[in-house]
Length: 238
Image (cartoon, rainbow, N blue to C red; front, side, top):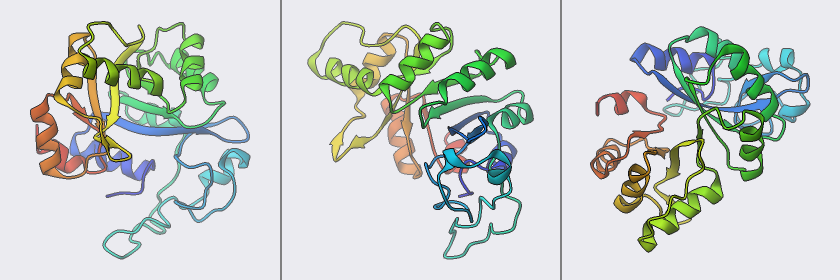
């Protein structure tokens, strides 16, 4: 809908009434924590090269809407779409909550520090596709910051839901499962998985859902939220 992880996208989502943002985090060469998905700048901006080798000033000067195609056009070029720091987004939306994905090693320490300084413990859920990265973050924050399931933890939950096990597969700091509908063609999201998560007082978030019918189906299964590129459609389900 809008260029991902940009200040423009956050502004537009907030205007719709969105109160919980999902974003990806990486660190620049000079240690800035930025909202950015890829290891390189090439896919989404008019820049090139490794994100981690770029200075914040260089990244901030890029056009983050340059390559975003919408209806066979590039309507966001030269429209002021920028890559923001996570701290700037937190400051801009003081009432919002955040689901963040640690995309690279080295993001754990600056995020833990920012959460402590800005007192974001009640506003953030931290996740990662790396068990080691999320484990490191949990150690740094002494388990005091809410997290989503790490990959191995997610797999334990799936196995528990399918085997009828009554044991708790979740880490103490985990507040939510964040899973896709399927993984490499294998169904993940089932009513039994939702029931298991709720049995242990965990939320269920499903990504990335951009169709109304699929949203309806998932909410009927009992999921608590969907992560979407179409907040306009998701809000219509409320």
